[in-house]
Length: 281
Image (tube, rainbow, N blue to C red; front, side, top):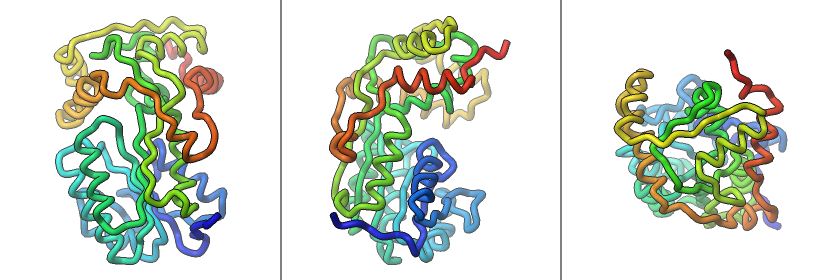
């Protein structure tokens, strides 16, 4: 086994406080690998909207995990990833791992930009995170006991953020993953209604699921004062990415790690045990 050693110089984890970045940082630290968090509030700061911050953040770095905020579907994201990758390579940081999304044309363009940069790249192309139900936009509806989304019978092989982090950490610390594109999903497909049902079973609470129109969904986001650009992005992810194009399971986790991915039912039981889904009323 040829192992990539990063014990002396830090790994830059862009979005190091996010769902996957936080987990990757924890895993690298546990392995004794120094970590530099790439965020606006870090020192040195990293801000996707301020390319002048990139050079300092890359100084003295051995490798980088690249996540783009808010999403690779945003116009200009692919170009930003390409610019960062080329800058990293010029500075001698060749080992780059990108978190990408399935079925997103702009995300696939970002992948191509990374591949063309001259980096020793790995791409982790992920399905919808299970953690969106517990750490993100769907937590509020679950607490309220009703999820209303512009998705009906489309099924998604939700993936556990821990599985993504395990694949990313392996990719950052083992040369065998150079040049690999891992499309990672959970082991089975669920509709959002079925996912709500599994959470209801795990929590012992009633959680209703309702299919609404994209227009109703946007109106709801506006009422919650979600910024217009973020609302448009979220709507696109629900109506475009979840149009059936991703209704298949892959073996990316198995290929990368030699084990099966975590199941949604196990995730639901694990999170239910924390009490985060308890009805606050």
